[in-house]
Image (cartoon, rainbow, N blue to C red; front, side):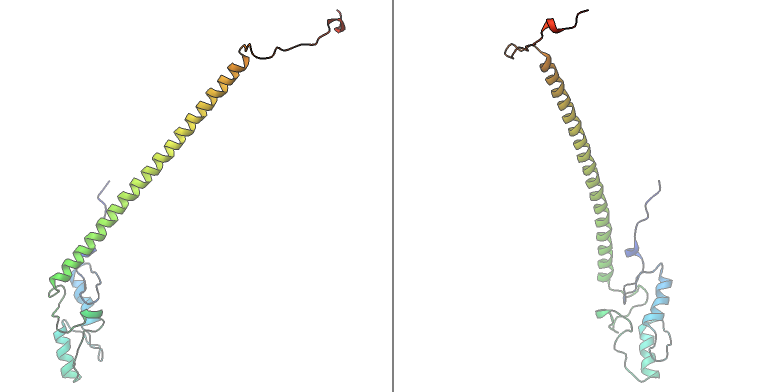
Length: 171
């Protein structure tokens, strides 16, 4: 038996803008270039949000106010993020805490399920044992009734045979 593969994705590099997890930072950089640091007008890719901002201002004479394809409050252009550099420590700790909680809940849930399964088996075995005890008690009662049936009981009425010996065939 080997070690179980654990889901440690919460420790892997992730995109601050969209929460996607990556195998390593190289893939993260490629993702950020393609999804978040790309000019929406000319589709040119940049390595950072500052480069994208400068490009939009100089080439298109517009002001970039938010990062493209970013979720909610993470689209602020003031965040100086490149890969995992610049990601607020609070966000990293929050992600680690959340991942650890999910992992332990999964482990504890599995242990709970195992205990529940063991309890069900124990209850089933107890029911089987009770049935066997009941069957034995019933057998003992039946045997006792049979024994009592053949015992002499002075209070019982005598059996009267009405036989006429004269009517029996003679040999």
